[in-house]
Length: 112
Image (cartoon, rainbow, N blue to C red; front, side, top):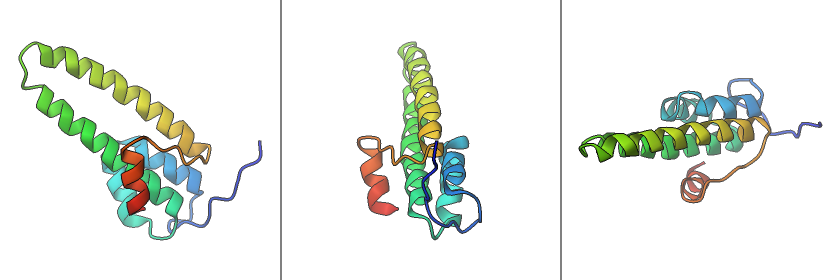
């Protein structure tokens, strides 16, 4: 499989590896790479998408935990969704794809 050129990065790493790492610890690594990476739009897109997606899931999880009983069930569903998204987004980033989630991807595209 031939790897496409995703451009130069500020850190000197391969862009696809940097993009994968933006998702590694959710919105935390997204923030780190968004602040550090100044040159590469591909990495900045994935970093912002990570911040928006996993930041939203984090806040939603906290809010839902205040709901008695139902909150536990919803948090389990949120955790499953988080895990699935986390894996898919890391794979797509490593493959060099501009995989765009419906709302978070639009926000990321505007701010990359």
